[in-house]
Image 1: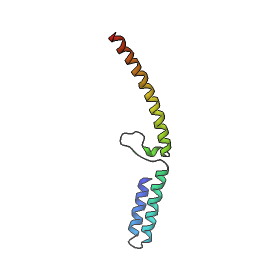
Image 2 (image 1 turned 120 degrees about the vertical axis):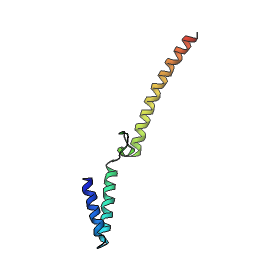
Image 3 (image 1 turned 135 degrees about the vertical axis):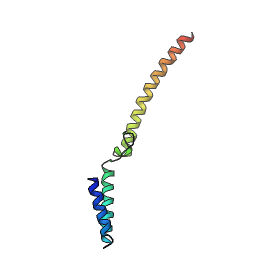
Image 4 (image 1 turned 60 degrees about the vertical axis):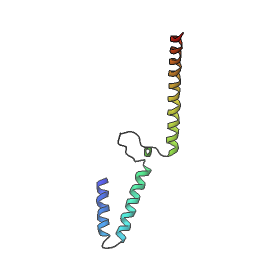
Length: 92
């Protein structure tokens, strides 16, 4: 699909030398394709992880991040308490 879109854009660009209205048509097509990809949440990362574009909006990302931070900090708090108890027992 992406290759077909590139071919159509190239043809419209070429036809633009005959009549500039084709350049406008190509620009509208590029705008529509990028807008559609952005609305779908399309985004690629190099490491295969989730990209910010995968979330519908920033609020969803922020909510997920806050939940993760709460869970992670709770886990670390419990681990630190265990380590402190062990250290306290070893020093006495």
